[in-house]
Image (cartoon, rainbow, N blue to C red):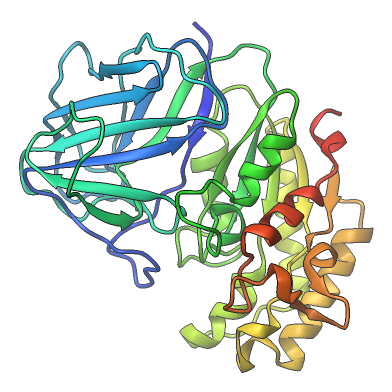
Length: 365
C-alpha cells in the first residue's frame, strides 16, 4: 500500500508564550473533531500527536465516521494506546472509503487527566467535547463547542501517482477570519479548483519566516511539517505578515527587507534540495490592523520584499495575493469587501479571491 497525506494540520506548543486559541487538557471526556479531507481513498489511517506533551497521553478508545458509516480506530490491534511525550503514532488501516472535500469525524476518548494537548489553535473548525466515553456517538448532543483541533495531526490515504502540495504558512492559509466550520479557507477554495491532486493545509496563525513564536519559524519547521509528507510534489508559501507585525508586540527589532529576502531564498533552497517545486505568495496588505502595522518602515519593507518576490525569479511560481486582495485606492489595506473586520485577515470572499490568484499551472509543471 502506498500512502500519502489526505489531511494534515500543523500543531503548536500549548505552553508557548503566544496563544491565539484555547490551550486545554481533557479528563474522562470524548473529543469529536471533523477533519475536512483534501484528498480521499478507499481506506485511511489516523495520525495522533503528543509532540508537545509533558507526560504520556492515553487514548482509551477512538472511532472515525464518514457518510458511509463508523469504524473503530485501533493501534496495533488495540483500542487503547499510550502516546509518549514528543511522539506521534499512526493507526491501523481503517477499511472505510473517505472522499476528498468531505469531513472525516474522529472521536477520541481520554479516560485520564491529560496535560495541555498539542493542538492547532485557529483552524476555523469546531471541536465538540463531552463527558465520558461517547466515541460511538455520531453527534455529541449537549457538547461544549470549541474552535481548535487537538491531538490529531493528519490522515493518510492510499493514493499512488497523485499530485500533493502543501500550503505552508500562516493564518491566511489556516483560515483565521473565515467562517468556522464552513470550509471556506483559501486552501479549501484552491482544492475546489483542482481537477486532479490536492493541497494539504499546514498554516499556523502567527507563524513567521525568520523567528519562533508562534510555532517554530518556517525555516525550522519545514523539515518537521513538509518533508515527511510522502509523495509530496509542490509547496505553496504564504509568510511574512507576522514577521512585520509581531516585533512591536514582542519588543523585537523589525527585520529588514534583506533579512526577509535571505529567508525566502533559504526556503527556496530547502524545497529544491528536497525535489519540490516552490510557489510563493506576495505578502498581503495589513495596514488596517493598527498604527504599528502602517509605519513607514513596515510599509516600505513589505513593498520592497513584494517587488523582489515578483521579479527575482527565485521561485518556480508566484501568486500575487497582495494585488488580488488590496484596496485599489489604498494598496496597503485589504479591500473592504474582503476584510474580516480586523484589517489583517481575509473573510470568506477574500479567501476565495486569494485562491483564485494562484495559477493552477504552477501545480502541474
